[in-house]
Length: 155
Image (cartoon, rainbow, N blue to C red; front, side):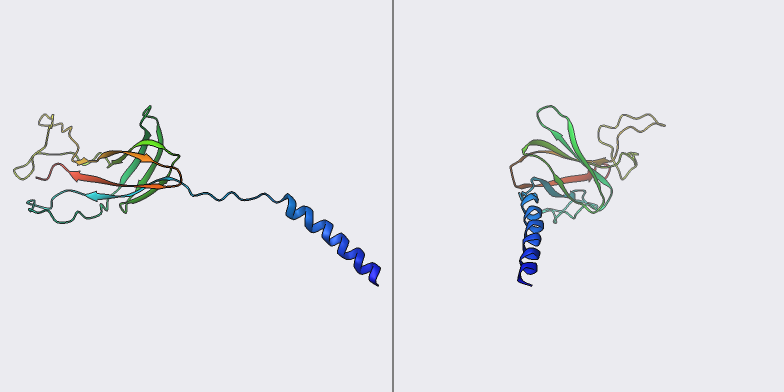
């Protein structure tokens, strides 16, 4: 009986040891990148002094990330809740909030279109304007960025 038990334990040990020795070690490291929020900097009506806190932008916007060295786009993320988190390698990046192009600015007595190049039938200037910021991403860290979107047709 003891020989059978010894043989069983030996075989079990041979099966278990190679499986655990051959298992890959997991390299746990902290990721890096950018995370942030897009704020709506449009004044609802007449702007107040001091201005109230800007609310989180709740419309569709695309966050784009380009390398600062060569302008190559390395990431893009469509969001609609105003918050984003994008993993990136360390480096210097231009992070942009890009709202959708329509609607365009149509001058009325209540709205003024900045730099609008238009004829009576064609309006070129989009109302929604985004922002770009240059951000340094360090190893194992997420850089926080606050971007703004505004409606330039509302004054």
